[in-house]
Length: 257
Image 1 (cartoon, one colour):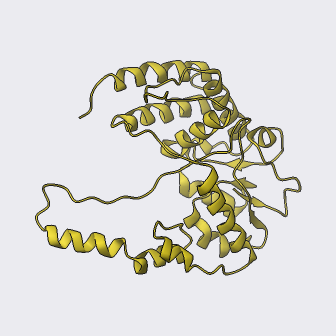
Image 2 (spheres, rainbow, N blue to C red; image 1 turned 90 degrees about the vertical axis):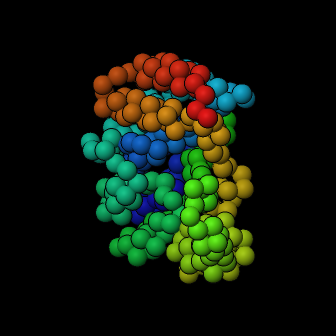
């Protein structure tokens, strides 16, 4: 979480702290970013959205409360937040619309070159009542069976996974998967050093990701749209959760393979 130290004296460390503070917190109001924040809040509170068999269990007190918190955060931030994607969240942080927000590691370049670079400081992402978690994933590549040039595709993947190319990514702020390249990154200043340390700590202790079920993207799409409608006041948090549970059960009952 990046926070304006010149505007916020007491750093919120939990979602409850954030809700009860005057801090204007920016987050994506739609698509995967919104669903991911919801996911973090539910898991952080000790809830689940999928059980041990990867079956949906959205209909819970934790899910309803997560949407209520998202609504509360949105209402004290910006009327247009339900339309924000990652770029708009970053822009709001850098132009002073918000006091704090989560940001992907790759946003470091823009943060470091912004007019508020000296005031923006990195902190651990807010934790829930039960756990500190951060929803995460990664880029991946594959060669389809229909590929017409296996040798060329293999060479490309080897190039993309090399320490040299990953080094370019890491020097731009991202936490690359190549440990050799990541180890070569030298912080440009004290803030960058803090950023790298917090990000590594988050990866080691707090990272969660989505289930491997092939139909998950359909449940995620339904989820963010319903939560977005709750942000807009079109439906209640309870209605959003109950509807999502019904949709997810129907989607997961169908084999996508």
